[in-house]
Image (cartoon, rainbow, N blue to C red; front, top):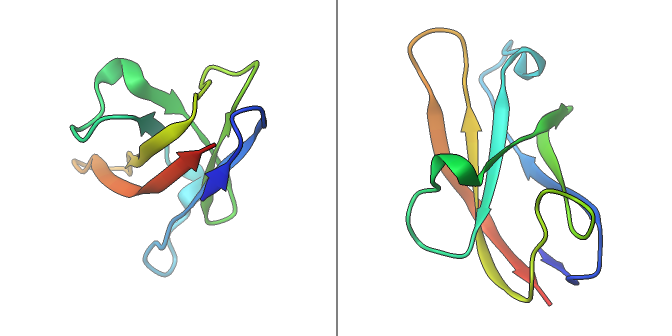
Length: 95
């Protein structure tokens, strides 16, 4: 995905879950980082579900203001039980 730094918009991360899984009931967070390491606790932002997409508002006047560059997007889903799923979700280029 490519967006200009001046844009405020939702970053959407599609999630494919097992059939019958209710994503809406699971906490979800996204991290947008400019480094290759796993996100630090302070880099995670609470996201929301929009159907089968996790979404986070990014850009000016949000908690996630980005300057030009390439960023790694991460997702964290916390389903019931002992799992706490963390996965890289793609690259975001800000121009």
